[in-house]
Length: 621
View: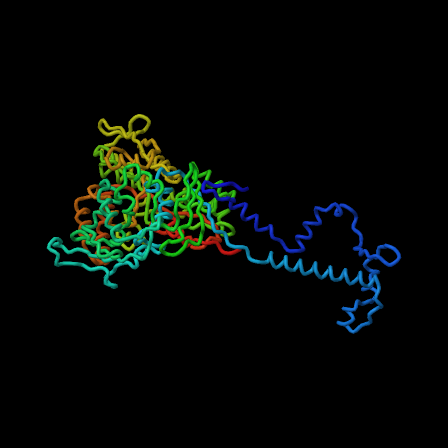
């Protein structure tokens, strides 16, 4: 079915495009199709006949009575075979004319066969389904992150192997290539500082203006104004200053004592020629439809869908696809149905999750669609509120660790494909050392005994009480993940078995995190990113143990990974002993895409699937 998209393109659904491949058939098939609609097909078949006109009258001659069947040869055949040629006659001229017509028809059919045998061009558009429509491209939302990764570009990023790779920068500054130095003679940095020198590729913004080193400094100055506690602000705070050396060269001086492994990810670019003098309204419009340097640009954004068109001057070369069509769905079920019907091509994580593994195994088996499963460096945890009468008590936390059967939850919800973490860092990340932490097997009898020893007794309906504190609590869960909500309900069931009555309440993720950060909650099931050990450690600062914070500062100042790993191993032991949260499961991302779509590379860091959309390409059919 054809429809006109918001960008004015004639759009054909993926399913319609696939069926159109059958329209070009062989000559024999075309002939069959043509004859099947002819009224003559409904008449009884007769032997093929040829009509010719003799000198005296018109009559029909059956094919088996033709001159060729009787051994006659036209002059052309006589020349070729040396056989006899009958005297010229109107009959012979008619036979020759019929032969020439047959040859012409054969040549036409051969030409048609050649045309249909030509390989049709590969598809150059992809239809993506997302759940939830963001208000802007820069929201902290999975749908917004997918769009942002396609329309914006970074200096450096992590690839599918979790390695730093250059994008707008010509290379990643390192000690080995001379781009990174540790300066120890700076009076303003008594503990030494990292200094990285970058060179930009010859690149342009999507409006044609060149990208310069001044755009990097402008972006850092803007990020320094971001609210405290945001990722943008945290990364900007790693930097002491940005020095412009030339139009394409700049130097980043990191703060005193900084030894951050992801130092190259801190600087970024913003178009200063558009934003430096922009009003609040203009900045709001920019957040909705940014003009940046990504492989795709926003061509149209109408309620329910976005059309992204390829940016031919993209820094790494023109994208192989010409267009991305993004459709927004209100629920995961609607997106799944669209995928099953062929209305969308790609359903990126977290649109679908590993709790759908059984369903995905039935239709995303690689025949038409392929499900990519990749363990991420992120997990979902049960956060404990700080109230010392409740979950601020380490004894209560230990009892909950014994009561919740996390492996059973993983086996049931994720068909055993996810794993249960032990601590706040996750393998296979280089900083994780889970072998340093002993696992805890579920033991509800022991959990009840621990709570009794802590002064809890059974009250009405078997709910635990201590002094005037009754253990009826609210378990908040960040919305946006069906699997996460199901896990929260399973946790509530395990808590009920030891006398803690937990009401599961699903709320927007931003609201849940606001309560968590403010300490105004009992229990909360939230996602936690552990892809950067330094940032992950900073999130738990003040919630574990003073020694944990000291170790975190020490690790951030060490230059070598081996030394850092030893410090992080000790931090994991301290974290597990204090148990500020109970790790429930490691996130297992599931991205579903056509098996014919090349270069789909999910990353363990949890980056949006569109991080390398410029390389996506369909194989020629």
